Length: 86
Image 1 (tube, rainbow, N blue to C red):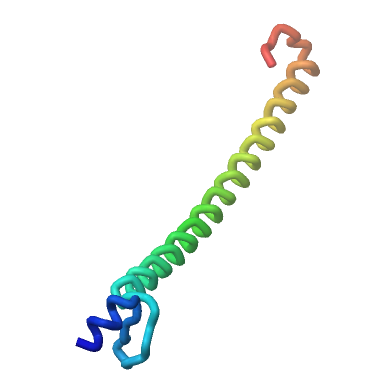
Image 2: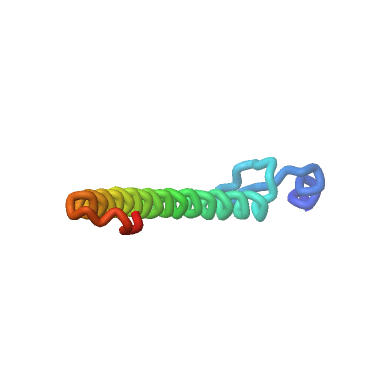
């Protein structure tokens, strides 16, 4: 009965019989949400690392492609093939 009266007043006892303002269910949901948020942030960090690696790879491939295009253009100019696309 005393717990019911306290519950109506918004006061609750936890598992250690400490007086709490939050309902134990709300407290548990808050803890679970906090853990889910931490997991989400960790996954976002991993995603950012993966995407960063992919961006570096694409940048490197673009540089290599540009270098190859320059080699082809130089070879065409040296051979006198001015009709070669590039």
